[in-house]
Amino acid sequence: MNTFFSNKKAIAIFVLPTLLLFTVIVFYPLLNVMYGSFFDYKGLTPQTFIGLEHYKRLMTDSLFYTSLKNGLIFAAIITVYQIVFATILAFAVNNATMKGRSFFRVVYFIPVVLSITVVCQLWLSILNAENGLLNQFFEIIGLDYQQDWLSDRYKAIFPISFTNAWQYMGYHFALILAGIKSIPQTYYEAAKIDGASTLKAHLKITIPMLAETYKFCLIMAVTGGLNAYTNMHIMTSGGPGTSTYTLTYMMVRSINKTYEFGYGMSSAVILVLECLLATIFINRLLARDRIQY
Image 1 (tube, rainbow, N blue to C red):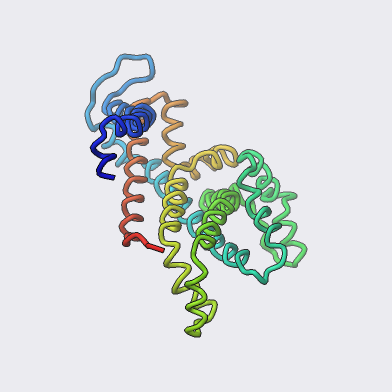
Image 2: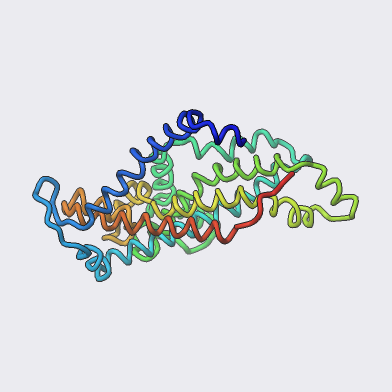
């Protein structure tokens, strides 16, 4: 290892390409967006430096708070749904006594590989107020709970969030199942000798040993939820009104509809900071010494 670090050519060959790609694809665009958020311009018009005016405007913009709240709701729903159900299903599929485990591994993962447009159209049909499958189901079982699921400005964000959670649950299922498979069986054999039940073995061995996997899943789910855009765009176009806007949707609207490029960039900067804070919080929450097998 010391020999490697003393070899400057080796460091340059392995590190510089990645560093260059990261700078060009991530770091430079991010700095460019932050810089642009301090200017007022409409695409091809001259840029006027206005300092923090866009950020002051955001603090008084009701649409900003609506977008922020929707992003947090969306992230919370998909995180809880995906992590909880993925864990339960991964434990079930990992159980050697369960029949058809190979079949269920494929079934749970199928929605992940489908186009998000296809999934949204599928759920639009299910949630249709007049002849949707969900309302018909309630009618068949005798419940008077027919709803216009996507037309209520206070509730539309919930079925949209569920659509995304349902589609990508399989992704987290695959990660958690792979994590469970990587845990040495000797731990479980020792626990069995000590008289631990299956539930206790999972609580004391499996879940703690999956800390790094859960950290990755949480970061992916939370930041993915905060960045949400496509589901809203396809299912409600941000409506009713602007009730299902997120910060990403607000940014796109500012750039493509009102042509306020600087204002849209300030929304993007807030979104980046929000994701960064979420990532730092999760890392601190699940901070622990690296597990050695």
